[in-house]
Length: 417
Image (cartoon, rainbow, N blue to C red):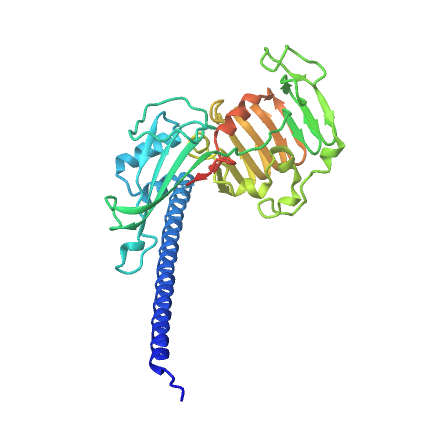
């Protein structure tokens, strides 16, 4: 009779079960450790992303502050009043050297859990076109004549996993970005003529028009030039009793006549109805009107004091019918102005304007008007009696573009790590 050893088979099964449990436990431990590692990696990546977003917030905040008015700039700043003043002097007056400014933020936090709290630090300096030379840690306000196109370096560092949300916080995760910003040009192009009108131009009295720049015309009209002086005097408009047209003379341009604005349309809301703006300046009428560099005068014409206040402008936009008399000077060669009138403008007396006069309507002139720059009219222009002078001056336009329309990032200048 056969005897079966059940005890031996049971021992084998027990050993196999124990080994299986051990292997399963090892697998579970490995999976658990892997999961913890992945969770830790995801958490770290999340913190890095929060730090990067904090750095970007710092950079965007600084750019917004640079483009804000001086009043809101100062009231929104978190540094000391001396640092605010120095910051403004450095940027607005193009002072040499560097300025360091600290901005703290609690933009990301969860209740009392400060592990995900974030702060950012921003340093700003003028360092040319360098993405590699960091800002100095020692502010200075040494004056310097720096061109308005100089680039400004913004260094933004974001921190997270911080001990607290103060300037002295200890943080374990950081991210940094650097970008260069520069003042964007108010105008992309300028007129190339002393007088440009889509309609007729009538030169009465001892009117003198000069364009000796080598480009453009003295008078560029969509229709006809009438009453042009036929008894020229002098060699240019600054000769004694100089009158006539000097330089490239007169051009009748039928294409220019087609650019007249649509009667009844509003140039501030219907830019497509006024193509002359984009043709001359590379910017449409609505964009120019809404620019931070434009002072909206409503139904008032700017006073001499307003036009010569360098914290304004340089563009002044008026709507209505205006008669300007007396001995007034608007702008200067160093700080020219752009006077836009949507309506009718009459200039009388001894009026001197450095810059651009742009009328959407009609303009009449008598007395002793002097324009250093250009006179533009979306209509017809009539010069009456008097010693009127319009002299095209390209240096005026160079100085206009030094008066910038805010800061913008230079293309390709962003770098983060």
